[in-house]
Length: 493
Image 1: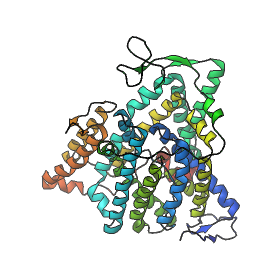
Image 2 (image 1 turned 60 degrees about the vertical axis):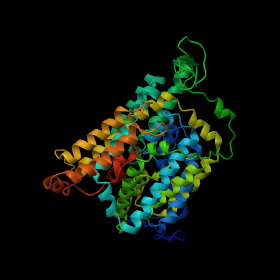
Image 3 (image 1 turned 135 degrees about the vertical axis):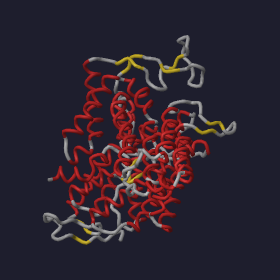
Image 4 (image 1 turned 90 degrees about the vertical axis):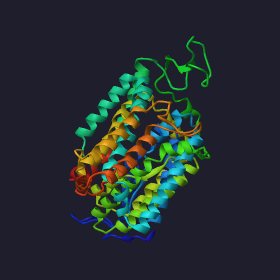
């Protein structure tokens, strides 16, 4: 089923305890209203993550709508999901840029990951979902998610936070308080609310306190003698200067309607290896999300897990081939379904069309790009830390035993390699003049390969204890995953 939804009841009322199935819909005005909720739910993360990766957020929003439509077609309308920008790739992209990669290099590396993800989905579809647990047990998946998140710590603290430490602190505090005091849907968009708060605070400070003095990446570049220099020059770094926190010049210059700028990818094996570890997280994430939707809709969707992973890979390839952000299914939107009990894919098609429309408004994209670095600093210290701690959440929910050296030793080594090499230009393993490994790539290889080698070499009693660990969970990618569907129900009640 792709189109042609059956009208649920009178299309207006939903009896207590009942739900609208994926192939059903309410009246079109109500369906449009629910679709608008899905837009709000996906919106914050879908434009924040491209910003953090240095990609065009306007194009990312537009391509998220295209990706959602393609995803629904591939899964035959059986898995209602919205595909927004993925957080799992942020660490790898930061590493690519630290190694001198351009936008085209970033996009090429992301496209390769999309191809690998699509192939993984095809394998899962043909062989069965059990292959995921065999190759990527919860212990390994948790470690990879953790090292991806914590590898980003220097970006949050050294790049964004330093641009305006007080605005960053205030934004961080707002996100923390909002996540604790708000419930249901509002709790799941705490990051978006924090971003709006920091944005407005920065505008207020510009009007009342005047220009702010700080260093901005890529601006006011000077050498050790204080002379203006080119970015490629030696010791050429950004130095503090007085500037407005928010600059709306680009917003005024941008047209109201037009196509986003498209960028073609270029390919490098080195750069591809830096972002490939995210595929591990995305396989687990998609599997978990399909299971969550299956539980809510009371349908057996296990046969669709392979299709969902394949679709996510295909949409990532499509989005990055034109300059967009890599995609993933969003738990924020699963939370909206849990709160409304409306699982109709018609609402997702509405949300996708709205997203495509927003992507055709360059002025809107310029407004997003004007977000101050200090605001991003306050958001990223929370967001990146949460991505890392989701790895620990996977371990806890699956009862991973760290008294077992099979889990403890290789995973500990992989995490320290990834975190310790974060933000460093020098790789930890120089294989040839043109090929090296470090940070996330080497940490992931050590964790995955090391775990399987350790398991093969371990005594029988150590291997036996591994079988008592739990089933594979959903891997969260954004702030909304922490609250989950339970909070959505609680907030709706």
